[in-house]
Length: 177
Image 1 (spheres, rainbow, N blue to C red):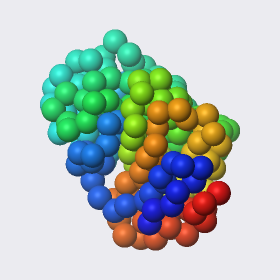
Image 2 (cartoon, one colour):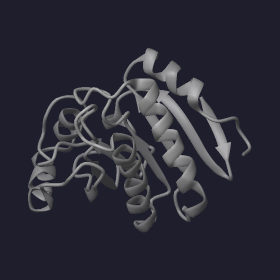
Image 3 (cartoon, rainbow, N blue to C red):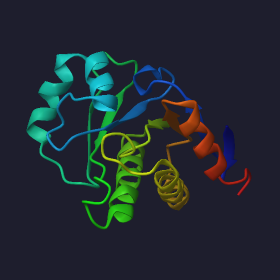
């Protein structure tokens, strides 16, 4: 599903975050130490190669809601933006921390003059955030940031499952706002 909001394309697609070759920046749902792991972090680190972990080492640890940026190494992108999402039911205030992930990632992409950014559904895997609640928080944060973006013109949310994509399609705002 694709929408145009204040001249910025906002879309949700089913796919693999590490295979978004038309995006300048991809977001890693990272762990605090920015190391390879399972899920999104595992896929991104595997595709990027060992240089990504080396570049991440001096940037760690990060706290929930924080974001840092690195090169993309062997990924087909220019940048990887690493965000630590909150663990649902543990890191408080979880909605604000999750919003900060999206806000901070968009700020970093815009500062680097990236025209496009792809997000996974941060915190919805092992961190246990309910998908619909996470979708509402993500879209709210993105909508809040759109008026501030100068360079980012495409924001994509990449969902691994069709079920998650259906949830985000329901949450996306109507086009033309």
